[in-house]
Amino acid sequence: MKIKNIKASVHQYSVTLPMIDKPLEHRHFVFCEVETDEGYTGCGITGAFLPWAVVTTLENDMLSIVKDMDPRDTEAIHHKVWWSLNPRAYTGVISNALSALDIALWDIHGKHANRTVAQLLGGFRDWAPTYITFGFPFFDYDQLVEYAQKFVADGNTRLKMVVAVDPGGWQEDAKRIRVVRDAVGDDVELMIDANYRFNPVDARQLCRAVEDCNLCWFEEPLYQNDARALADLRQHTNIPIAAGQMEGHRWRLRELVEKHAVDILQPNCVYNGGYTETQKAAHLAQAFNVPIANGGGWPIFNMHTMAGLMNGWRVEFHWGMHQVGQHFFDNVPGPENDMVKIPDAPGLGFTPRHEALKDSQVKTPADLKEGGVQTRGTPKEGGSGITKL
Image (tube, rainbow, N blue to C red; front, side, top):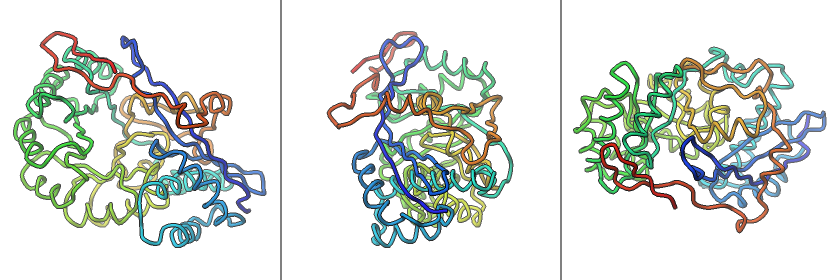
């Protein structure tokens, strides 16, 4: 079996929420499809950063390198891509393009072998535990409570909320965390995610203020995922630290582990080079008795990692990312009672809706939609603090 063609395109989808009259965000992503001489096709995906550069890399640079190689030989393919396009171990465009390609290759391998990607990765189990990202920065207190209680009532007892985005600083984040903890009770797992936005002092202040809230983890609290500073923060809080979702290869992830910077490592196959690279990071974490969990969304791809590997843990069902998956693919599973079941179909277990992809394709950067509900004003108790861009 040989690789014959790679097709890639940029797409856009407007994510909505009940009771909000404007899209939450306009999600952009790159869709990739690999064709073989034996009629097998596989699909992959990567995120929004420099999408047209990713498309060009896939269709021109990577195709010329991997054409006529066996799609199942992922080690050989990675070796050739690394030494032809990325001998200095850059991240960014190369990592994202390689992620989309590699996911498609594993999809093909699974279809040919009649096994799921989770089984190819090791087959630890056919399900993975889940959590819901619900606490968006534009929610006021009432909305935080309403959405948190809604998800708990639906059988989801693990929730994550965003912090470090409010003009009120870490003090406002502490209030918001307490509002949610009081609303859902002590038995619901609660996580927070700063998306790299705190300096070490503010992060430590927030940790000190909410250490009695029994948080499951604090995700990517510090600028640039600075491993040295993360290790220092970890020594000064009893809240577990998680990071790694946007790191572009195993060496960046290795630094987080070897510097004792994290309690939970978060490799994301959509950004770090695909399943081939994620498996290496997971095995590294195993050697240090560190669990891996999915951050950065795209649950229907990352669920295979968390199910297939013995130290695989939680899959993030981010509201927006899950909507994208449901819209563009058939046979997509969702979270039920804190878990997601891997589909029985081989490969990824779901198939692309090509009509939906065609309708959402964006031809030029000028056609990308911007804006949506992105920020909120400082809320008052019981009042709406939503502002719209």
